Structure formats: structure tokens, C-alpha cells
Image (cartoon, rainbow, N blue to C red; front, side, top):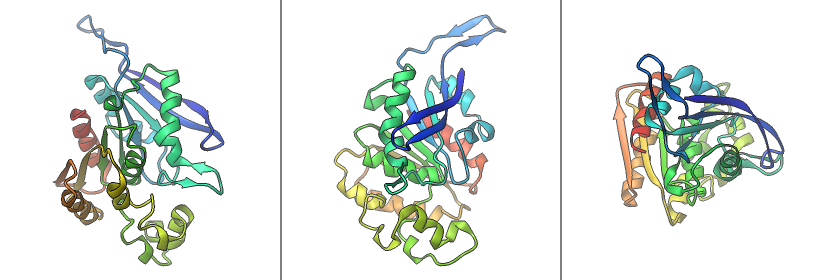
Length: 257
């Protein structure tokens, strides 16, 4: 396994931003004098962190590096700040365009990553789960599978949020990201709208803990997907909104790739 951490210049954000990249190369096992060669170009998972995170947070809180090596897959982790991976034209913080399109071009130019849709996947945890769904659908020509772990599927009731000191339920906070909250439903920020308007929907995998505060939102969205005959899997398992749950089920998603 090879780990690269650095920064790249991107047009979508009009600045430099950090990324972490895991490659399944140099799988040398010194104790038994063996080496595993993973065929290039690599299948690739673009993995999105949650609120308050950065590109290094999966490295610190999960065993994703070892799992990527064991399953011969490259993983690219961008820094999405607290953007929900949406586009803000006024500030030129185009995080949706970045993770859905430009990041693929940049990383494929630097690393030996497959350019095939069937080898390219997007997933995320919490805020990143929403970002993976939104951008996996908006840029569905680029991704064949979407993974959502404890996804922050908040758009159905986001317009009902009020003043709250807790940022998770703060209308002011979400207005700074989503814009006019009364206009989210029926826009490209609304996953249900994207499902109904996407012609090539990627396969969707969802997992959420039974004691997670987001469980009902995830279960309801899965029922929506089934009502549209979408190819989707939903796992509701014991657990809460924790890194332990994320670690377990991001691995389950990778097993399916």
C-alpha cells in the first residue's frame, strides 16, 4: 500500500486544496517473502468525509488503508470542508463540480487510475454520504456505484429548521450552504429530484445504525428508492453515528465493488 498526501490546484475552487490518495501498490510481505501485484489501472473509490472533517480523517479513524490494500482498490479522499459537496457560485466554492468531475481528471492524470465508469465509485460518511449521493447522481456518467454510510439526508425537512445554537439544526448554517432553503426541494440539491431526472442511476448501497439519529431519514429514502424500482441495498444494523459503524460498513461497501 502506498499513501500520498499533498495538495492540488483546482479550477472549481480557484485555489489549492489537500487530498489523500491510497494506492494498492508495493504490496510486499517481507515476513513470508511474497509480493502481490494489482493490475493497473486501478479501480477507484472517491471517498467523502463528514461535517468538521478533512481528507485525513478516514486515515485517523478507520482501517481503510489496510482494507484498500487487501482488496486491490485505490481510494481518493478530498477535503470538502463543511460544504455538503455543493456548489456556491458567488464564492466560487464549486465542491460538487470538483468531486464529481474535476477531481477525477486531476487524479487520473497523476496516478494510474481507471477511466472506466464501471471501475469508478463514490461513497461517503454522514455529510459525505449526502455528497456521494448528490454528486453520484448529478455526475452519473462518471460513477457506477454509490455508497452512503449514515448519510445526512436532510433535504426533506431542512426548510423547517430554525434558529439553533447546534449547527446540525441551524437554519442560518444551512442557508449559508444550500441557499434559500425553501427552494431546495425540486432542485439539483434534492436527491429525490435527481433520482427522478437521472437516466443512468448508479447502483446504491446504504447503511445506517438503528440508534443513529439519521436512521429514519435513511430508511424513508430507501423506501422512496424502492418505489422507483431503483437498484438499491439498505442495511440497518446495530450501531450509532460513530466511526466504528463507518469503519465496518465502508468495508462492506468496498467488498461489493
